[in-house]
Image (cartoon, rainbow over all chains, first blue to last red; front, side, top):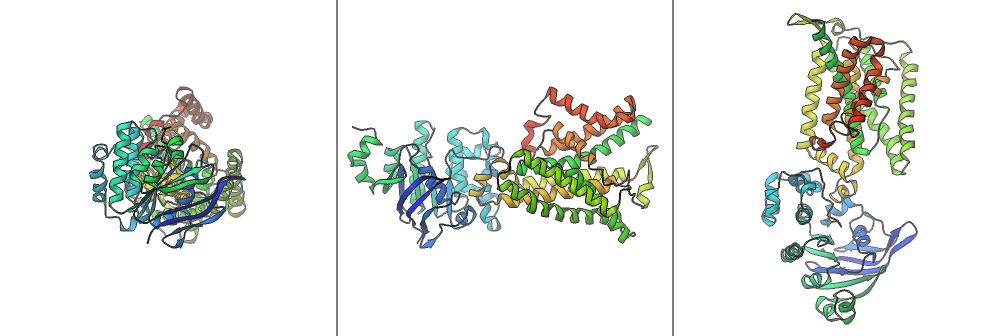
Amino acid sequence: MTSLSIQNAAAGYGHTLVLRDVSLEIPEGEVVCLLGANGAGKTTLIRVLSGLLPLKSGSIKLGGDDISRLDPISIVSRGVATVPEGRRIFPDLTVRENLQIGAYHRRRSYAGTNELDFAFEMFPRLKERADQMGGTLSGGEQQMLAIGRALMSKPKTLLLDEPSMGLAPILIQTVFETIAQLSRTGITILLVEQNAAAALDVASHGYVLDRGEISLHGRADDLKADPRVQESYLGLA
Amino acid sequence: MNAVIQILSGLTIGCIYGLVALGFSMIFRAMGLVNFAQGDIMMLGGFLGYTALSIAPELPFVFILVIAMIATGLFGFVIERVAYRPALKRNADQIYLVLLTLGIGIVLANAARLFWGANPVVYKIPLTFDIVHVGGYPLPRVYFYIVGFMTLTIIALNLLFTKTWTGLALRAVSQDPTTSRLMGIDPGRSSSVAFVIASMLGAAAGVLYAPLFYVSFDMGAVGLKAFAAAIIGSLGSVFGAVVGGLIVGLAETIGGQIIGTEFQDSIAFAVMIAVLLLRPQGLFAQNRRVA
């Protein structure tokens, strides 16, 4: 079991609490999306899950193990990879090196450059640009690279922070298709998104985060039909 | 004939500056810190080599070099751990960090004075007096050691940065420490590695410098010229550190001949100021990729 479960999480910066009391279940092999306005605490939750920000209270369990106090290195070694907000490609590493560094935590079992083939198959654009610096890629290419880099760690769980942010509509579609495709391979996915309509399409369950608390949650189809979600997040009246 | 020898000796001393400048650049890239103790690390390496020689006078020079590098590398590891990393962790202000590195340099210089005395020491080995004739030019044999070591260093650093996980991690951390952690990289380990390499290069510079000149507790001043070299080549650039070192070495040797050797030391800084006026980012700011 590699389900990810968060219970009564509280976290923040200094004395300011950004997450007050957040509980969330991500069942193994499913896509769960987390919606919410800017500043609701979505990225803070990703930072907590990836080990960058310590919890103030509450707990995080991965397949039954408590991972609340682990640092990012231990978390990625347990199969949880992050595609951070803003992609955070290493600008002065080549595309190839950016992918390779995703495998850093399992470097002892790394079998060489042919391990990159699956990423190049999934994102042929990256193969064309393999020797270019990461910083010279377009936003969409960088997003693919960020996803490819996370996959290089061979994760069982993937945390995606706003993968569609700043992308052209056609690329947004590609990104969501990629997520659906990844989900079919059995990876557990937490998808943080502002693009609620597309996120609810690929997700099985959804949560709505509002000022540090979960205000709504349920099956994705039910959320899509929920008037509160329609009004605030889907732009429907 | 004199001009050729001057140029060669300028390039050789430039290699020494380049080695120390590499140390400045490595640490700056890894930790965003200008380590002004780098010149005193060079001095320490020179003295440790001297001590190794007094214990085992028959040891080949290459062994002396390796022993001094390893010992100084360990030393660098310790000061990074006990002094710099805790200060960085507590988010010490840049100005205090600079003072910290200066302070460590002063402590090292005074400790060396206590331990090895105030008088300069000379390596009493044949290499110090060994002259070879190449194309009719008499040249100290150690020149070839210095140029050879510099060449090996460049090759080794290039392999490190492009072919090893450690090198890849060093580059990643210097670009984005937070995201590096998400990849499973420990930025602390990277700064240890950078410090150890910088200290080893500094030690090598000290040991290679000794047969040409001397070792003395106050030779950390050489580090300031190396700092000028690192700035000229863009602080943080490995390639730039080497070229900056060569520029400073050549400029001060040739300039010293033209203007007068008593002005030699100021030439390095005159060149640095001139370069910064024309190109404030240094000569090789674009070349971060060369690592």
